[in-house]
Image (spheres, rainbow, N blue to C red):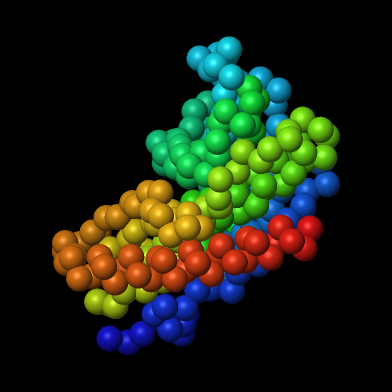
Length: 241
């Protein structure tokens, strides 16, 4: 075992910053920097819902995700130029949307939609989890905007949600993988956890050999530690805006 390429301890997060209200035009926004992964999350309030939800009295939270062409070492072609989104993009968008909806009372939101745009400015592993963590801060900003405009009298937020990656690298369970670790990991998992310690979603894959129940338990403990730290940072970011 040679340790992590970054030199971090196994249970150590990358340096994280959350800057709420980064965009002056969005109803809510957050620039999240998690190591060299930077994602801009912007929330837009729309006074309508998808057609299948009309007259339901309930609102909706949805997300869109994309990577800028030079967010990685080589240029990635814009998906708009191909005329369709990749399966990866669609899967990540759905994950972000599910995660954020898990902490919102849709009836209290009213018949309106909040759309969260997550644009990856720079990618170094963990872009989907960073989008969820930053996306919640942007969502909270949009809901605060609804209050300021007199459109809500009771908060539809029933909690917060954060996400982090964990994996097995050189037989060592580690927290918050960067690209160098992720691309060489024996197992890679993403954990979405609410502020009250409940699991929203787990995505886990053995890239090579299957991993043990004990390894999974260790990954889960690391995820709880990481999400607890991120939840505190979310609270601080919203308090400072």
